[in-house]
Amino acid sequence: MMLEYSSEEFSVIKEELVSNLNGSIEIKNVTKRYKEKTALKNVSFDLHRGETVCLLGSNGAGKTTLLSILCKLNTVSSGFVQRSGSIGYCRQRDCLLDSLTVEETIEILLGTRGVVNSKEITKEVIALVDIEKYSKRLTKQLSGGAKRKLCVAISVLNNPDFIVL
Image (cartoon, rainbow, N blue to C red):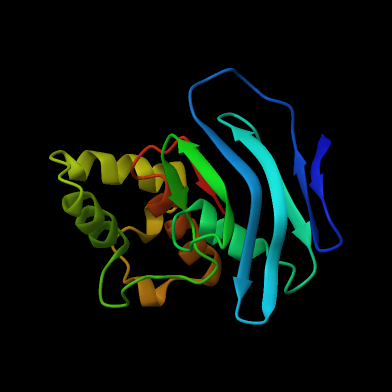
């Protein structure tokens, strides 16, 4: 493990590169302001496919803001983010429809992406996160842990180069 970036607000800790595969994200001098508040100030570091990264910091330090910028859900005030590769994002809060089963949730999302063999992929993804016994259950009936596993399954549906948890 090595310290990649540190400020008074938060730190980025990386595990050494596992393999030299395609996919990278370059963050250079990223600053994000919300009216009077500066959420991020001159943040710079690189991410590469195969690395494990941890953002550490107190509440309000800008960690969620940085993640939303990485996932193109927010814009920078200054600086830049260069991405090569796809990103799967598992939000802090569950974004599930209570009236769908686990299987239906994944199949619908695959369908919106034009996937033809969605039933087979659905079974694989459900097995990957170990929630097979809940596949026919409505998402509103899942425990908190099973809901988080389903959200992780959703984040890997497009076989991303990076997964943001």
